[in-house]
Length: 129
Image (tube, rainbow, N blue to C red; front, side, top):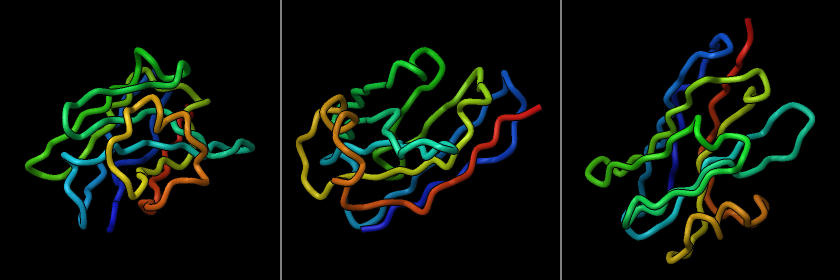
């Protein structure tokens, strides 16, 4: 199982980025995948999760209304569209999942990051003027 996140970069406050996570070794339709962020001085936390089978999503309050998760089953890829970025969104973004299916997005996002089984390598997002 491999997940590969990409799309990070340097952006000014108020700007936008789209992250991608390409998945191999399992079919997105059967799993729920999370986007987790490791911000400076903070623990890694899930900020959004998406269920592959129906596209249902969950967002942490700090990103709700600004970030949108989506998935493309044909490409076995998920995306995180990030708008109105703020300096506090700076961090390394990972896509990750557990090795079991059937999680709803809110359950997965509220699960400790230490429990996740499979991780992408992370992509750095820096929001700064």
